[in-house]
Image 1 (cartoon, rainbow, N blue to C red):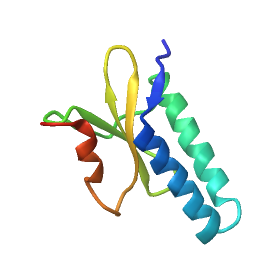
Image 2: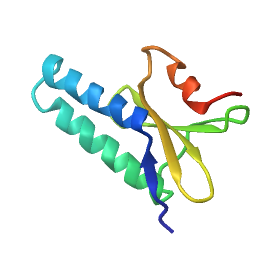
Image 3: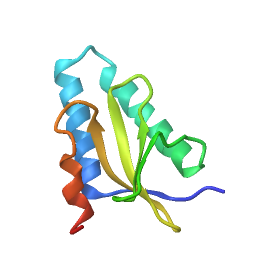
Image 4: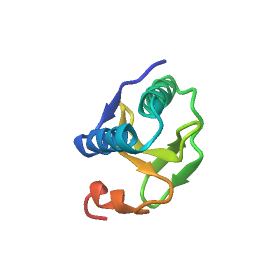
Length: 104
């Protein structure tokens, strides 16, 4: 059963900034490959085919890693949809996305 995957505005902005950075600083075609890998992972998450590799019981957040790139997708799995909070680099600004959860 497929469920909708919704990128929150901040996650969408993360993705756009990441793709723009790769357009300028990385080899030609890297941003297109990254975009395709993120899209594929989002499809797999919606179809429940992508394994979650990390889950925080305290925060209720899951993560899935983008194949071939040092990025992760952080999301909340509610009964209706998967809500993507961030598309984050694995080593830059760890935990910056936590404020997107609201008050704890």
